[in-house]
Length: 479
Ligand SMILES: [Zn+2]
Image (cartoon, rainbow, N blue to C red):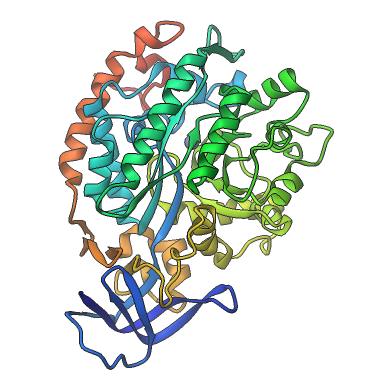
């Protein structure tokens, strides 16, 4: 048994169970024994194996990222920020995923290690990692020290393009079933991992790429195991048009009809609802269907904002009664920046500063994510909750003046002020350095992996273009 005391913390974001929200507290002690918080209050009288000085610190619950793709997104750095296809309503998803893909498991390992470091350094302690199953994934995740919700992806179809305006589908139902079986085996392995920090999420990749049968069976497999179910849905205008072409229904309406919504379902993105200004479909039911089903939404503002797309809007989803969580989806894997963007973009969409508050965003990044993962022991600093805590340094210039340290953190300092991170009572980040992984080494290997990916682009692109032709540098390169 190991007892750790954070002594006399200057500011703490503590959870009040009865009120159902976070509060500031000042000058208190936080105690954890092994992986569980046992005391939150003034002047802890007991003995401790380790005492951490809480002066000049903000202590907040570890952040929960419920949507990410560490296996490849870091490989897209410098590639995807301004890549999109105007004839596909700006999304670059289909062209990019056809032309650019992790070339090998070594690339996946470098990419994931790099992403896990970014996540830890921005205060994420729980992560939903949606990736195709790859060798070494479970071991690397376990090594990272993160609390892992591994979501091995699979699908009955894959997208392909023959031009830049029509999204096509290559169906292979056997591949979908094989992928499903592989995913369940990997989830089983994760759940049995001796660390006790890993579990799984059943993750058919995209609503439009899976047969109704595969979605049903996936949903049942999640229910039988008591684990969450997630699927990408309403992530592009093309997807919505395809679902209307097939079923006469929006993706959300179809998901409702076939019975895959529910309190254990996490909807990846759910951005292009029938009421969205880029859609303006005649129905106005999508948001109410999501809310009534109890499904959660994983909101990831960054990748969409780069295309010029925003959720309309986060505040309306909350008021409709939807449980909102946040994800990073792409690089940078910085959930604090996602909180900031989600707040600002919601206010732009609503033309109303009061549509969301910083408190709403913190709730989404902690308790909202925990609810989506069906884990009421995460995302909260209170007795009997998991000891997943983040220490923010109030003395870094971007945090000062720390009159309202959560605002300093979200709107100013973000990851620059994260100094220490504990997951299940174990210190994973110390003085801004990840103790379990090698970020610099991963960055080196990532650069090589990106070069290998780029070499494969002309073979994969539907017009045989080079990476430079598809996504030129931001400035011309002079002689
Ligand atoms: Zn995604």
